[in-house]
Length: 212
Ligand code: G16
Ligand code: MG
Image (cartoon, rainbow, N blue to C red; front, side, top):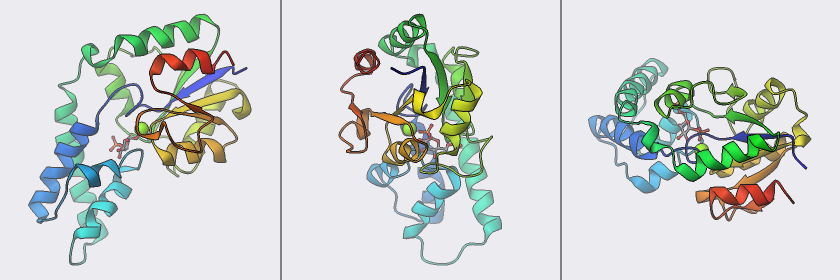
C-alpha cells in the first residue's frame, strides 16, 4: 500500500523530551518563569522559537527579538551538551528491528523532523546514513503543522505524498501529514489522535499498518 515511510524523530525513533525539558528549565529558571513537564509536553514537534514563545506566555514583560535569539541559542547549547549522553543504547531494539523489516519489504525510509539537531541525534544513535533521506528543521521555513518538512522528505525519496505514511507522536505532526496529503500513524502521545489513520500501541504495529 505505501512506498515510503516518513518518521518523526523526537518521540518516535527516540526520546529527547527529558533533555529538551532540562535545557528549557535552566533558561526559564534564569528568567524566573514557571515551567513544568506539562508545559514541556506542549513543545513536542514545535520549532525552537515557537517553543520559547510558549514558555514566554508566563513571562511578564517584553523581550526583544535579539534577546529571544540569545536565550534560544543558550537553550540549544545546553541541549546539545545533554545530547552527548545519548548512545546506540537509546535506540530501542524493536524500533531498529521494525525499520529493518520495513526496508526488507522494499519500503523507503525517511526522517521528517522539526529539529535542527536531527543529524547529530541520528549520529548519537548510530543511525548515520541509515535513512534514505533526512528532512529536518535546517531545510525548511515553515514548521509543523505546515506540511513542508514531510513534502520535502517525500520528494527526497522520490515518492508521491499519497504513497507515504507519516509516523508521528505530536498532533501538529499529524496535522502536517494530512495537510500534505499523507496518511498518518499516531504513536505515544498522539496514538489516540483522531487525525491518525492508524493508532499504534507499539512501534511494531507499524508492520501491520503497512500490510493493510
Ligand atoms: C523536535 C521536538 C520539539 C523541538 C523541535 C526543534 O521535533 O519534538 O520539541 O522543539 O524538534 O528542535 P531543535 O531545537 O533541536 O531544532 P520533532 O519534529 O523531531 O518531533
Ligand atoms: Mg515528535
